[in-house]
Image (cartoon, rainbow, N blue to C red; front, side):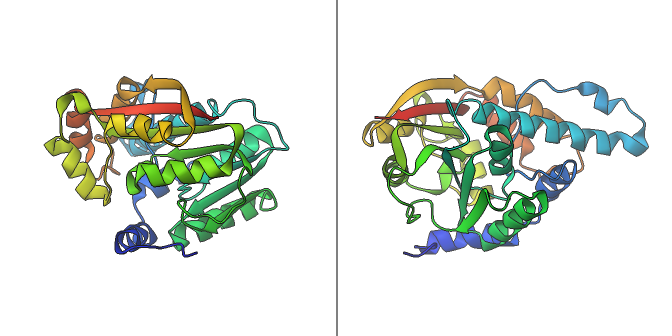
Length: 278
């Protein structure tokens, strides 16, 4: 079993090992909870009206509030989680969602990433919070973790499914989930109604070294791997305000207008999908 199993996965690992993007680090510095996903919810636009010397700090804090809201929304769909349960954060990044899950449920959480830098950072965060005995991050491939079958009550992917083949991912998750366990993902996907990926979606793929899947691909791969959807929520309108605010910040990366174009033309969607393991 190897954490990095292909040239492409090595490229992805190298990208995240080298990543020091302020849009992730400066937002995480607000509370010490570091994410690698986007935000949802209404923006408090008054942050743009504060004095110039504190305006950027206010924008950063608001962006961080929105990304925390996204993680809380995902965790709220994991079902009835009790302290004796075990959870898996697949593609765990710098560990923010895992730490939030432990704080919310009191249960054991494992996170996996093919970026050793992310794993080391996340484990340091767990140690700093005094929860390293309950929250552990592993240099593992989410397609082949080596964890025992049926060990997890819930598994999630927060904006990480676009780095893998969905059939392989859901086969792995189906093996790891207990019967009746819950899988949740929040993901961007392209809208099959419009045919192949748009130019904007292709630009996002190139920017993040990923391969965004069609919406239909999720449901097809879930059905093939004993995962039955129990909820699908279109968050596209909920995430647009985050991108509108982010484009006005100093941590903008230049991809903001591309995301806004992709969401507004209907060819790209931001979904939460929850499914039970039967």
